Amino acid sequence: MACPDHTLAEILTSRGMPPGTSQARMMTLAAKTDSPLPLLFGWAVNRRDSPGLQLASQIQWGALRELFCSPSYPLVMSVGTDTTLGKSYLLQYLYALQECHFRGPQNPLRIHSMPSIDIIGDFAREECMRGVTLADVHSFSQSDPLCEALTATLQSFTTLTLLHASLKTDFEADGRPKPGLQQLLSVLSAAENTSFSLLLLLRDAEDDHGPSEQRRVVASVQSVAKSLRPEVLKTSEAWLVTPLASLGPTELTNEVKSLRKSRGISLATLQWEGDLSLEEALAAAPKSKKKFPPMPVLQQCYAQFAELFAQSGQKLSAGKEKREKREKGPGPGALAQRVLTELDPGASCEGLLGKLFPVAQSHQQLTVLIQDKVRCLGRGKEYLEPEERRLLESNVDSIDRKIGQLRSKRQQAPPHPLLRTFAHLVLTGA
Image (cartoon, rainbow, N blue to C red; front, top):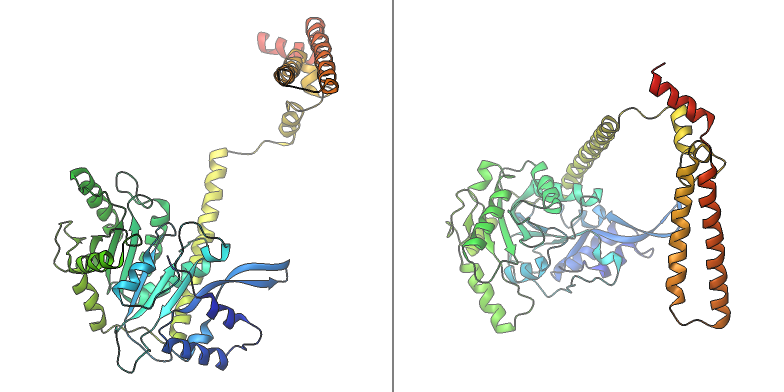
């Protein structure tokens, strides 16, 4: 998982860099070096409703407007859940990208774990090297409305989607996707894109690949296939990816070569050794007639998805509240609320609980006192200074006196007249 380029983000958000032409020229120069261009990133901003700086996600449309002013190469999006590590590391070797800074599972700063999306264009040379525009999604989170809407927007224009998933953290034992992956699949399906291919890159498989592990892999692939349209399944496959971060240079090169030449699992037939190798599937993307749109078109589509998800979120919250009300039934009335408050175990002895049920009230107090005495006796077994031990013994004596008073009160407490009247009504039915 790569850290977003916060150097570029800092320049974009600095006061010395006015929005508009200056930002666009700076991003154009950065694109010439084949650097990831931050489209969505988290940054500290001032808010009127709260003092101090607050972390928030933001999208810099204007900074990329000049660079992507016309349709460019087909879009390839790399995405996965926030628990799947190594997405950008693998992308670097699949597309010969420059080295990036990568982070492990422990992030020292909260801003590094916030959702972000980088765009990597093919502008470094006059002739194209990759022939595709890459969108690298980091730490996807459906709870971030900007990340959710922008991911769906990019998915609606993508030609090839690299979906990274872990068999250990993203799937149940029976192959069903966990909530994080299920949310990501729902966002991808919301784009309603029928002219793309999905390459499922599965991590954390067992080394032996025995029959039970193969059945688990097939079940996981099948659960992902259920979220795709039939026309997408024809060109979609899955591959098992071994951990690359711990390998040496020679082993890493050989492993990537083997992965590129290997044939995956067909999502349509669930058969091993599918029709295409990973290298052939990646090579088909630059030949697509579907282009990455200009930034104004992307921004307009984003606004539509943002409104759609906002409306669906409101409907879900309203439906949840209605379900909770139906399950709970009608709330208690004013009299019932007063009775419940009076009968609270923490209420004083002057309340209804102490008057109507003195035995129950004293029993609760006895339980608390006995627990306090046990704690005091347990502490007395430790080494204490003489003054502390005298104070502890005094507390124990005080607790014993209170316990004795409550026990004598229980034996003498008569039933309250209201309780006797209620018992008479129940017994006689009058």
